[in-house]
Amino acid sequence: MRIILASASPRRRELLEQIGLSFEILPSHVEENAKAKTPEKLVELLSAQKAEAVFAAVSEEESVLVIGADTVVARKGNILGKPKDKKAAVKMLKQLAGKAHHVYTGVTLIYRPERAEEPCQVRKKTFHEATKVRFYPMTREEIQAYVATGEPLDKAGAYGIQGVFARYVERLEGDYSNVVGLPVGRLYQELKQWLDPGQLPAVSGGETNPAAEEREGCHEGI
Amino acid sequence: MRIILASASPRRRELLEQIGLSFEILPSHVEENAKAKTPEKLVELLSAQKAEAVFAAVSEEESVLVIGADTVVARKGNILGKPKDKKAAVKMLKQLAGKAHHVYTGVTLIYRPERAEEPCQVRKKTFHEATKVRFYPMTREEIQAYVATGEPLDKAGAYGIQGVFARYVERLEGDYSNVVGLPVGRLYQELKQWLDPGQLPAVSGGETNPAAEEREGCHEGI
Image (cartoon, rainbow over all chains, first blue to last red):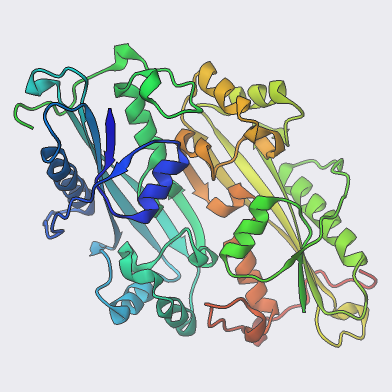
């Protein structure tokens, strides 16, 4: 079975490698211009668009698991994606410094098992995880010095929790890897429901529970 | 000024490097057999013993900052340090799987500035951070496979959150780096109180606030 990460994000790749998964990368090139009423719905929608675009490009003969994901930051109803330039990055960090915000990552899994003869054997599941993050106060100079590194430009909310920015992070409530870009704990638990023990990444001794298998989100013509 | 990490832990070294600090490593070789009534007091005491042992070995002529740290895991009043063997590691993980526990890291900073002529110019501060961690349930096979990797043996509570074990972590409340072994956000905020901007690690544009300087924990004869 092929496992495909429908994302070009190096952080997501590292997280999947961290939990021991063997996979390929096939970015979706979906235009991220969807609209939704809440950040939760937005990241779920975008993760589904990415996973579906990549799933559609895979031969129908093949057994495959596609993982799509999207991350945004939200504060007081404002959704913060990737900043368009350094000025926008400074503005975002000024909004976030010394306060709490939420990070939402939506994930869509699409799975076609071996010998899936009917479309309804394709399984699909979308979920999201939310993590509350609180920053220490930052001076204007600290914000500008961080933005000058260029690190904020490809990151939702203009920061990367896994780098030097850790010095400004006071606390989290929720999953840490979700803030990096992919909630690997939840993802692994979902995979345990679908895959055979032999398909799960090593070091698990992974046991699946066949009784718990469901066909969530099974629609004709996925 | 020399900055010395009084710990041989590779995780602590990586965390300090992550926030951009330049430092040396000088493990303390303190026997970790202190007794204390609570995990908070225990990690504070052990961090102070480690920092003091290393500080005592540094020439009195030198400006130096010593960082000592100690981490334990606690669940329902039981303090879990490093497991003594694989059997103990399995037992610890069985206690933690599917439930919440706390991770405590104590940190002691001892700082002698340039031209410190009186002992009382030496500053000392001890603090701790607590992080609540919840694991997903784990099967016996999963616990045994993880212990078989050998990874639990040098880690308090028999797990390393930054590795493959991330697949079993459901959520945190508190600082993530504190679980890895050193609360770098809090540490950086403390250093801002003591050091000049030029002594703070790069990418900070770091501003210290001289008005906030205190001589916490200043004792004759440290």
